Image (cartoon, rainbow, N blue to C red; front, top):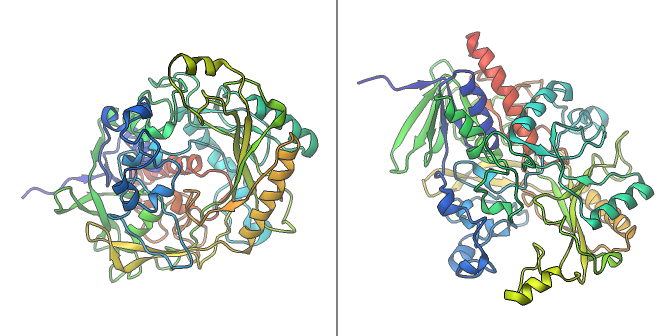
Amino acid sequence: MSEPEVYDAVVVGSGAAGGWAALKLTRAGLKVAVIEAGRKLDPARDFTDHTPSSQLPLRGKALPKTVREGNPVQSQSYAFTEHTHQFFVSDKDQPYGTPADRPFTWIRARQVGGRTQTWGRVSLRFSDLDFKAARRDGQGIDWPLSYAELKPYYDEVERFVGVSGQAEGLPQLPDGRFLPPMKLSCGEQLLRKAVKKKFGRTLTIARAAVLTQDLEGRAKCHYCGPCERGCVTGSYFSSPVSTLAAAAKTGNLTLLPDTVVSHVTESDDGRARGVMCLGADGQSFEVRGRTVVLCASTLESTRILLASTSTRFPDGLGNRSGVLGHYLMDHVGASVAMSVVPSLRGVKDSSGERPTTFYIPRFQNLKGGGRDFLRGYGFQGASHDCGPGSAFVSKGIGAGFKSALKAPTPEWYVWLVGFGECLPRAENQVKLSRTLKDRHGLPSLDIDMRYGDNESAMVKHMAVSAAEMLATIGAEAAGPYAGPPGSSVHETGTARMGRDPKTSFLNAFNQSHEVKNLFVMDGAAFPSSPCQNPTLTIMALAARASDHLVSELKKKNL
């Protein structure tokens, strides 16, 4: 019998982190296997970006009954529609547990590309205000790296994936390597001037992983519709059309879709040997690697590690500290309902029909701890007309509809959504379930998370500041509504990085303190949850960690 192939790296997960690990490692000459639990998508069959609602059985206004009833969690996502439900897992096939009084909304995807098929694409850098927050207020631990150390990787990621945006010179939101920005609408320009004049706050176009210029064979965005339906031109970043495609061109990539990882296997000397898998036929097999890189998403990577037990590591591979599974975080989000902008009634402007929001960066506690709460929050939002041709109202047919498109719009609206930092707490945790299993017979997770007093105070402050900003243009705020943890789909933590092996699971390079050839490069590594969207930082960390992996492998330290 021949010896099984041993890859230089086995990467579990093909989304934002997995795509970057694959790209960096294959370009360095390593032989890499990328393992994905879901299928490879066919854009011709699965993407519906150019499919009008009139061609769908329910005209895009509702979900098929079996889909809706079988997915009580996934259907809570704004992106889960008749056009897009094929991009999400089945709640029936992938259950998880929560306490009755502490719900958690776990939005998931299993397909090549993961959630990069449906993400919101807002791409924001963290700063040292975020990386060094703990030393200022004593909550949690500092990140074991600085902005200066991560900056070259932010630059690299932005250049490759294409991030459009406007430089603003704000220390709490560092500028990046931007493609030309998209335009603010009339309502947004009005609000930008008003909040700057009255409060000194900045409203800018959100930095977004959407092309405004052709890049690396990908066409610039042509503003065709909701991005979560898929993008046949590859104008927004998803790993299949960007990082994974580039990795495949090296000839060093082996992609294994429809392959579920149950656990990491361990060698006699305590190193990671590979991963145990279940194929589409239900058969078990092992994929071996000199290094193992988990990029399966925050909670799935942690589930795999918790299931990877041995005499040496009875509580999960590399988990002597007991930190694994703890310090789960998700942004606390507070929606502020739409409000009419009276001064723009009758104005016609199509600038709001674009695939990103505006962004109001954090303006709280920039110089020290807060009186009402610690850390801070930012706002995303938009202002648009609600005429017949808007993305929000699309009714009518024929000559009458065409005429209506040219008519002055009756109303303009503005909306804001706050995203606030959740403090890291050990009691917010996940464990392997003793009762629930997925359709493959693998243990599911029990998730126990709640927001604390700090998050509650932050939500109240969001409502006040949103109302005062909207009032500057004569609009009135309604709300707020704060969803349960998980609703923001920005879950992080549970395998955090840090300098002390007694209080963290990973070092500064996303590398296990205990198992040197084991890396976790997704959001599980976050020791805190800054209010900016996490995906850009996940990709930058994965790029940095991959360079470290290559260096250590060449030195034979792994």
